[in-house]
Image (cartoon, rainbow, N blue to C red; front, side):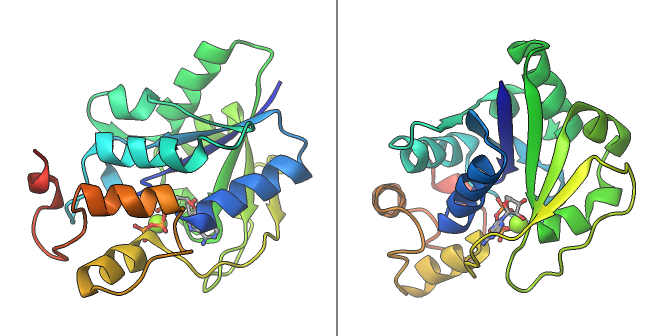
Length: 203
Ligand code: ATP
Ligand code: MG
C-alpha cells in the first residue's frame, strides 16, 4: 500500500490542501491520502488555534466525498504538541510494514524542515513530497538524497490565514473552501474575531 500523509493545522482546510493531496495521489499512484489535523501545533503557539475537534470535523466534511481520502485522529488524540516524527511513527505502527508512507508538504513547510524535531526520523519513516505553493520558493532541503521529491501542483493562492481574515472582515470564502466547510464555519461562528482566543467560542 502506498499511503500519502497530509499533515496540517487545517484551520480551516481549503482547496489548496485538497488539490495538493489529489495531485500527489495521482502522480505517485497512491492508494489513499490520510489527512492528519494537528493537535496543538508547536509552531503556532503564538495564536489561538481553533479547537482540534472543529478542525478535525471540517477535515472530515471536506474529504468525505473523495474515496481516495481519509482522516486520522492520531495527532488530535495524542496529548501535547504535535511533531511530524510522532505522527509518522504512530501511522506506521498502525498500518504495518506493508505501508509505504509519502509525507506531503507545501513549499513553505518544506523550507522550515530543518527546524523540525527529529528530521532524521521523519525522512527514515516517509518519502517527503514537496509541492509548489504560490509565494514560496520550492527548494530541496538538501539532505537525505533520494528521500525528497519536488513536484508542481496547480497553483491556488489560498491560505487558512486569509480565509480566517476574510471571515472576520465579512468577505466571501465561497470557492476557497468546500461548501460544507463554509457552512460549518458559519454554524459554529468560527473566525468572527481575528484577535483573541478563538477556542473560547466553543460551547
Ligand atoms: P495557515 O495560513 O494557518 O498557516 P495554511 O494555509 O498554511 O494555514 P496549513 O494547515 O498550515 O495551511 O498547511 C498544511 C500543509 O498544506 C502545509 O504543508 C502547507 O505548506 C500546505 N499548503 C497549504 N496551502 C497550500 C496551497 N495553497 N498550495 C499548496 N500547499 C499548501
Ligand atoms: Mg501554514
